[in-house]
Image (cartoon, rainbow, N blue to C red; front, side, top):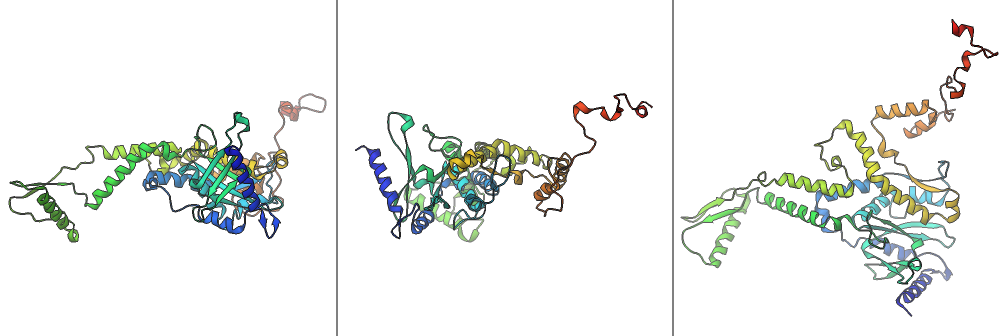
Length: 424
């Protein structure tokens, strides 16, 4: 029996064990197991790279951007479906611990920081979805069947609970898997941005550590102690320890030295070493790897308030559009049945919430859309979070509009000749 057969049998046996509750077969985890899965997802490990401010800011911008966009189930004709089971899960309660904003924020954080984000789909006996439970990515492994024919290489997910030590085998149909934009050679797992920027982040952390040490020392450079004579290593260590202890005592600004000893500070000029310029360049490189605009990391050297709306549009097109598409496609293929997909149902993130301009721009856009008959009055009110009005669902256009082939018809008589009044 090969390794994959053993794994498959283990998966089947484990799944049968999950399916026993009160003596009846149930296609779900026990709730105690769900709590174990969810409560141990972090393990208290977040990585040292979060200490870099630019890296943390980029994670914050992307995670919060995805978390604040509502997602809807829609038909091909753009009608929202509110009576589907996923509507309540994705808009009200993904699980008993999180709101939708917290759920998607955590998934986007994991997708960027670890390269992969996982969420277990807990299904009931009737096939309905009970909830979506995010998993700690570092505890998830992907096991692939190593057959010669690559089209037969099925795979499963294994999850190890760091608290109880339990091992869970999860079918791909029951796992939402969101990968980063760059994946490994097999395409089944993503790579984290921090692994790509390892050398850049190393320099950023070194510069942050250097600045922290300068602040701790009161922005004073190292000292050179000049003296006449010769001291052994033990005497030198004792002298330096005494001076350092004296300098740090009660926030002193001065120290005392023995006779014939002189203290000479080393010249410290961050401008000469272009420290600020190099640090800013590193920040821009980290932001570029995430697809973040400089203004999102508080770099307004080439930005202005007048261009903020265009920058938001650029951020959506160049960065968020791909991320949102990955979420929409994964949710559709894992949370909908084949029949529902063939009927045209699909998930759609409402990106209008991040593309709204200032009140003047928003009013101008809504006015043009209503006048062109694209939006009804109630459609415009809904975007402004205002209640609908009576008879506001009618689409209106200017009554003088005619088809291109009918241009000039208003100036002709019934007999086909031009109107006499128009000639005059």
